Image (tube, rainbow, N blue to C red; front, side):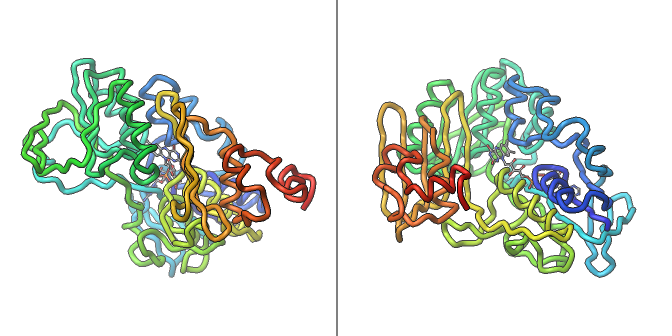
Length: 407
Ligand SMILES: Cc1cc2nc3c(=O)[nH]c(=O)nc-3n(C[C@H](O)[C@H](O)[C@H](O)COP(=O)(O)OP(=O)(O)OC[C@H]3O[C@@H](n4cnc5c(N)ncnc54)[C@H](O)[C@@H]3O)c2cc1C
């Protein structure tokens, strides 16, 4: 059996580990267009911050490829042929497969701002190469503008703040981290970031750039030395050209199979069922990418595995302030907001749909598990779980299962 994996990151590595749970001998070829050992993408901001090194960023130990008998090929896949069961690379070579996994992740979305072509230097912040290039452009005299107050833009801001004269983050949305935080929690996190020295311009729309000055819709002018574009990400799927069915991302089922036999997909390039909302979504998150990859690998090798518990979930910290969010934000709410700690739970129809925790994030796993498992809230002491999440709020039978003592 010959397995080919496109992408050498969380989903690709999960796939290798899934395959090897079932098939110790089959040939595995990984194709990647990044010239690096597999690394943990969320750590690129910590590299700039000086809190990690390239060696420490490795997502797996130094003997991973040899231990798992994988061949790593550096190249860019330009075409997938389902008919001939082969992929084509930009250097003209072709590699055949019995089973293929597509794990090509996301690309930065760069809006077509008028005048952007004359801005220099400008960067996106998605990869180790991006982080290295950005780092080379920074020094204590530089004023940096980051467009996008989402997770990637703010991680970048945290990573570079100490190295430059100023960091201003600009966003169209009226609050930071607008896809994961509500108004009150966003305010709390924004105040924390401002106390560290980051400036924000929210509800701001860029009309055009005139060299290194942003002209806003209200005609104010914001000059900068370095521009970082962190507006959003898009699945990296354009090269697939009809070889598998695509909506916003590659469509996969609960076994991570695409619409085309023997072709699987995992990670940021896919869209999958969010059990907390019942909607199909792109969930560009590392744990989902790994778990989908592992599921794909097991199925590709002839095992049986489903990944049907995906939910959007973020665990992130900024200058020591922790944030964990999960699920969807609909239904009734339970809120606590005191001493810099924020908790909001969303529930309806006898189940927990989502939560936002800022500050004290202890026991977030209890809430995550209630969402993933769709636990009926009348089977637990939900009032107690809201205030003090802990196993004691569960019935004895559920506690036994959670503690591994029962089935
Ligand atoms: C700055 C930053 C911070 C983040 N923080 C968090 C966080 O706190 N929590 C969290 O859950 N997630 C976070 N993420 C998202 C997380 O990194 C992704 O969800 C995860 O890396 C997805 O893994 P993946 O394997 O699907 O794709 P990717 O990690 O994007 O890897 C895809 C790989 O495929 C390669 N590739 C693409 N196209 C081709 C081709 N045609 N041929 C060959 N190779 C190709 C790419 O070069 C890349 O190496 C962060 C991301 C960034 C950029």
